[in-house]
Image (cartoon, rainbow, N blue to C red; front, side, top):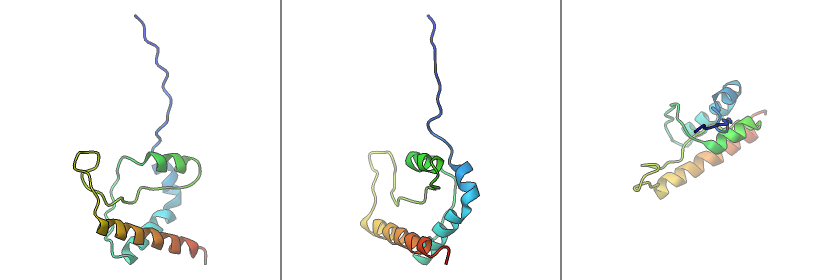
Length: 101
């Protein structure tokens, strides 16, 4: 038998879209620091939605979700961490609103 395969890119590496827009990362790092969250920067795989948005013109890096044990039967996130994540997102909005001031 013969098999024919058609490959299409559908999951892009957002690094090439984030690198020219590092101000987005700077805002996230500042928001985390101002919210009392110590940034831990490391490359990760994931963020299908963020990758799609980045390639459509909206740079969308992965920041953090606050969860533990991802994709397993013991995955969880605490209310305290979700509250801290919310504070960081609000701070990102505030910093972004004043970015060009």
